Length: 116
Image (cartoon, rainbow, N blue to C red; front, side):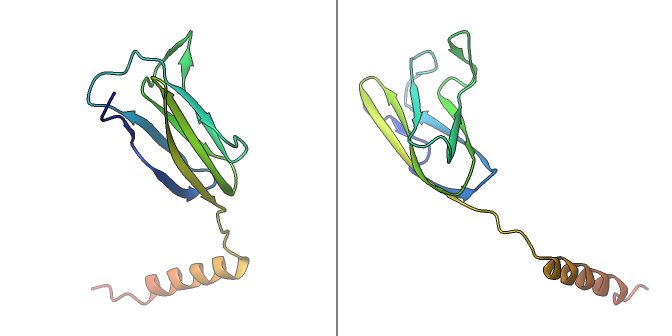
């Protein structure tokens, strides 16, 4: 079957993010059997919403980014595999000093505004 592809070839995001990934086709594949696999589910967990054998989100999945790292997600359909490379970055948390500086800057902006 020609014209089938993933909606994304690579994803770069942050831990805690949820991203959709679909198998895109020029014809209806919503009732077809698509198998999804993550090379490392500790980095990227696949949520496919299958209930009683029928997926609710039929031609795609949601990817839950669990922690920093690199992995790949593969969709298998009609004897072919389609792969998406995943890069998950850790979220950088602001230090106490950065939070305080943000507060002071915000306070300064509000108090120095010219209110007519």
